[in-house]
Amino acid sequence: MALTAAEKLAKKKKSEFFNFVKNTLRRASYRWKPRGEAEKLARVDRGLYKCAHCEGIFKRGEVELDHVDPVIAIKEGFTNWDDFITRLFCDVDGYQMLCKGCHDAKTMIEDTLRAEYNAKRKELDKKEKEE
Image (cartoon, rainbow, N blue to C red; front, side, top):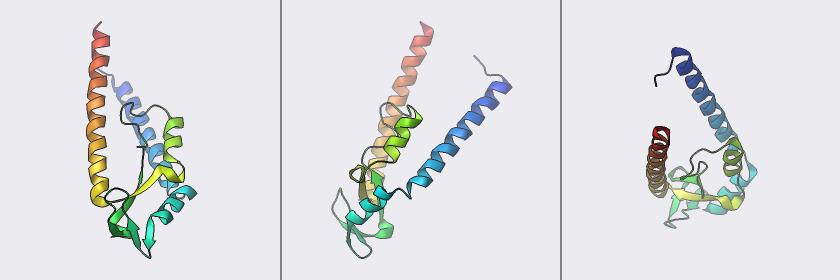
């Protein structure tokens, strides 16, 4: 079923709005007090932080504060704004400091799993529509 021009425009606007709100909330989360506390807990010395995974010591530019549980669930994907906000603005123990190597590896695994689940979900949706 092909979309009309109006439907395509509406879908694009909805996507742009979704991304705008998501990115605005992420920027706001940098000022979330528990996030700053988690960063302080990972500090081992002035300008040095311990990676929660490999336990190496790194300079500030070599680490990233990461959510222990992904903000957008791997299996379910985006469910609703309440879940997104609850996961984004978590408590101190919901954060971990990771070196860039560990963070990149974690992100790659999460993205791969998320893509696999999305493909399975689309396949199931397609089968349901055919029935």
